[in-house]
Image (cartoon, rainbow, N blue to C red):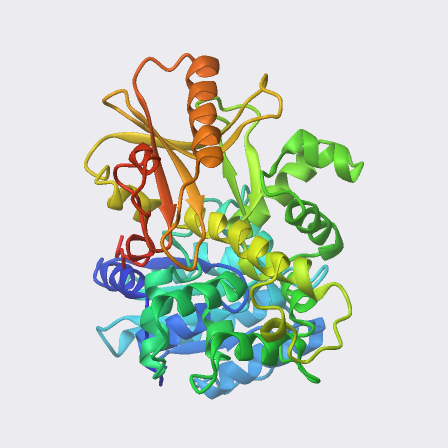
Length: 475
């Protein structure tokens, strides 16, 4: 099996749980293509006492047959069950028999768990009965479940209010790779790209391991993007629809929210989303936004220190790229290469670099050497200034100093001119006047290579560069 890259923290967690000395129910969740199944198979090296996977869009009969086939594979010799309670009873009997003959962990892995829960199947009730009455009493059991339908996983396993309430002993949220992890992954696949190339590929594909695996080390970034999105048979042509339909029921509603957020660089409040989509601002909208957060499509920021009126921003790079360039018909099979340096592509890089920085807040904080100081970070939007001032990242330190981060993408050292200098000063003054911030306010420019030294660069005495963003943080 391929060597695991970028999942050292998750491996360490699994090792800690394996050595706990008690029964464990581990839930792993995350968006499609992020590597959940690969993580579990890599850690256990495929050595399971029972393993079954749900069938995407399978009927009740198909799911039952798949489960029975797995039971037979791992030693069960009886007839096929007619209900889920009977099937889990067969599994419990099999596991108890195995546990008597060994002291090591009994490892059970149910993959694509939501697929088993077909309408009116009684699957959840049977799983609840299996764990509470039989499996949890096997002291050496290590029970792992995962699934791409994150909304189902969150409602029915992680945040279940009924029989499975708080039964999961640990949860692991498997997120897309950071820049540093993506770089390590590409290096393991014989890529020799400079960091600016890795950054540009990341802006299109994000840190989703499967998407990164489709890149060809023999091609440069523009040619790879053309192959995946604009060639005569692009491999990722229908991935956007497949992605959302695999994650959510009523996927169209979720895609409407993503489409709306893709058109606004500053993001929207929940009230603004409801108004723009002409839907009721109720608990259902809150659930959908929460689902999108759990799948790492959107990020929620408090508007300043207030807990009200928070801002939702789209931070999924694949979705940003799809809505900007893939919703129109492009017949040029070398579209990306042929539009290098155009205002449209440059503007997109500028916008997306801001989202990359937001996704790497921990690296920015480490680069500013604020990780040892108590701090809060948030976005801030003015309620009074015209045009309205929005600051995507404010780091508020315990010593009373607020650092305002300005993100600037450049293919060379960034040159700060007078007009941009004045805009930054205006943002700082507006923030301090409107919030009544008592401490000092300073600016830090986050860019690719750094600042060209001139009369205006002193406003950012400690700029953050691409090198900081590539820091490989283990925690």
